[in-house]
Image 1: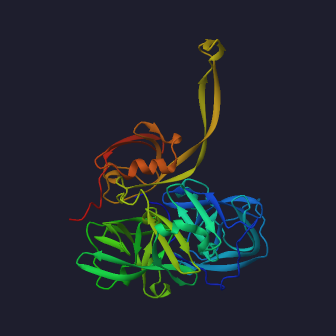
Image 2: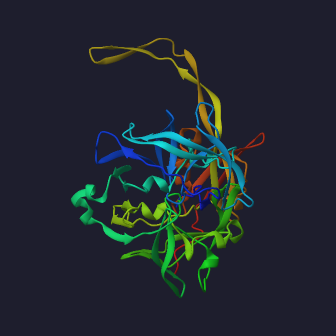
Image 3: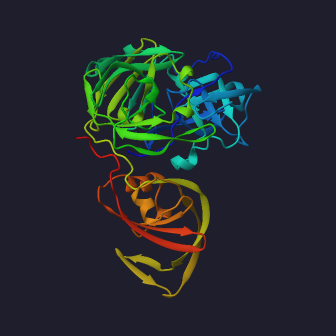
Length: 443
């Protein structure tokens, strides 16, 4: 499982939702557009008042959130508000901007009166954890008046005017009733944890959560924390990193779809206020589980449609190195390129010129920093530390890798040997260790 920042809960304690309405141009009944799936998070391109930005699609957040201020982005009708949610404490100040122009898919889907909540400052910098620019979150209101189909295999989203426009292919889906509360979708699932079976417990359908599932340990009766469990960074809140435990449970069932030994996270109880959660809610279902289906979400008729895809039987992975890596900006790198002037004659390449002729190329290259090291992990035992700058993995420079590729190398491959080269102060250090599963399958 790729560990990535996810928003556990955001409650905007200011206003009831303003009326917002997405509509289709050209009288079409559906539109389709691509998305990026990075660390089990859906990222889509959106134009806001003419500027293209990248947003996370998230059913766990009600409104549209914009992170920080963009110098080139024009916002309309701005006033101050306060946000509250997991990890916030007393809340933080932000801005509300009314009647903005949003468009998706080459302006074939438009909202001319869209309201944005702006989180000022760097309290939610998700870009460094995802490795791509992320400017905000498109919340649950996007789903209110249309049917949204998510094809995780083809990485395409199709938005329909209504469920009838889906056509005959809907017959291949299984139905799961949605419970809609304050414009957020919930479903009932079964959990088997140790000797206890929890029947039809209520969980949030949360596209912004990258784990398979997340549970509030104090909201499950007779809850038993199964061992082995690890304590580590599990998410990001307004006021910083959120920590908690991860383990495996015996099974999770959605109607007739049963998953054996999924990985579950448990945020520390001091990072949320239980009395502010939805009534009887015990947790969330996240995107790492949903990527095993083709998904149709129909808020109007309160129905979720699921169809298993080719990923359905894939195992649930956990990071085996103990390292949490983040993108920490860029550095100018100078490289020397050998000049080899060539010409082509009758299909043959002929080289000429001086062998010792060079030119110098200056490029921006990414910097990757170790943000956290899990206690008693292979990386910690060998001496890797928070703040180390990552230079190479298995002799390959990380400057040629994306953050997602780095995390994939560190997350799986039981007993695989990992060789790291890091920079610490003015020293270059090398470490070798083997990947170990910290939460192996339960017996």
